[in-house]
Image (cartoon, rainbow, N blue to C red):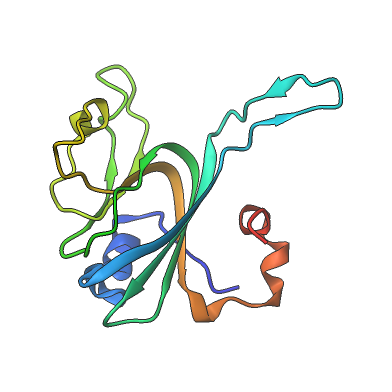
Length: 157
């Protein structure tokens, strides 16, 4: 399987280099699976580690990109817009002062602000973003028949 995991700052730099910083790209689909389910007695279960999000991005410069976020804590997909300068970074400040959980943040804009996630008005232009515990990515053409062995991706097939 051709997935590349983002674990270090070097992984982020390689992602940005290989994808051209996602410049002149656009989100073409976002498939979110919450992981919530009911058992046979209709009891509802919520996953501890959040949901997963398969984000597909088309680019004018490189092949279609698939990003698979797991442990999704928050996400927002805005109306279609061109990605000029997106970000991909690790953050340790999103839970406040007492927790230093390392999360990964992707945004289709370079001005992502954590306070943005708490405000909303239809009068403003918004950006798409994902805040998650883990991310792996690949070029879509690298998909193969062994994807069914990938527990995270198998949910989307």
